[in-house]
Length: 306
Image (cartoon, rainbow, N blue to C red; front, side, top):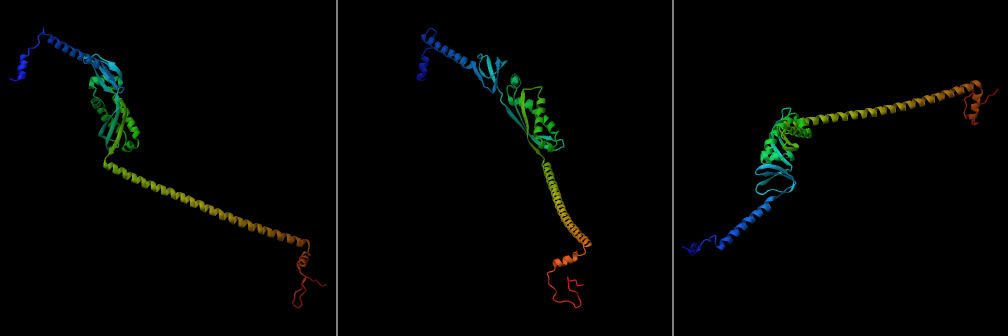
């Protein structure tokens, strides 16, 4: 037997009448009181963040919904469970759906939501405050159903070209579906991606190429029409120019002929009125010189011999 064991056995336990026993008892009571005080101090006050709401429970039963701030609760008999009120986004991958023209597609759909402030007690009572569990049970089935229904009202081409309308219709259908159980507030629903079959993609590419070719042909036709219009305009301009030039020439000839006719008529009238005008004209134009050679027997010009 060791020395420590013998000392322990030889040391008698303090009896109630022993002063040492009172000291031990007082120390134990002090420790218990300290623990109680600390539990009251640290267990009676709690804070709720601005992004949270709290459920106050008394002996496990719901008492009230606690708003953000510093609050007091009864220690040991009251407890608090905090619920996140921030916006959450849940995504569903590779959701199979068909368009109205029977084109299969895999959709990626995301829903942005938050816990409705007035439904905090329901969130705790039904799902223990587990937001993921609540989304899986309340939102998930409706997302799968309503997205397929709404997508089935669009053709494949319209689903791509009018994506904003498709998203708004999907969100409206989802809000209407959970109206009877509005634990969540739906902020938006987005069909983030639409993956059609490879066959449809190839058909779209072929159709787009055909449309491009048709557009090119239309552009060529329009260009040819414009060129033809330009050629006609130029030809009309040249013809008008030729007509104008010919008209001007004809007018000049006519005017020149009229002038000559007027001159002839004037001379004829002058001759009729004065027979000696010819002699006068000859005299005015004669330079006074006689011809160097004359035909025998002919008369001398401009000389009249009686």
